[in-house]
Image (cartoon, rainbow, N blue to C red):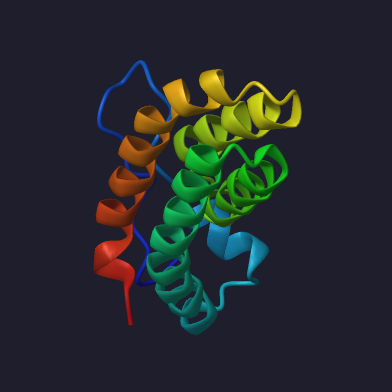
Length: 125
């Protein structure tokens, strides 16, 4: 598709950071909408990471679960498998009210969210 590169990967043994082609297929090739989703991700991912951290610090499992679920969905819009998977692990831990496990998983999620942010930066409108 014009204006879209192949999936971005950093290591061959891991899934790509994201897959712009797959995301555009779901958007019927709407590059403008893709750019809007990128802008939304850039803004909301930081906000949600903050909400997740605050929820974990306050011991609010339900709020942590919601923030992780939202981060999972944001990353999934771009086939961001690594970030989405990291968020899903925290979501499950929070759902089980295991906030210690959720907090231990947080650094990996932050890393994956930031990697996705970096990969998406060139697609920002």
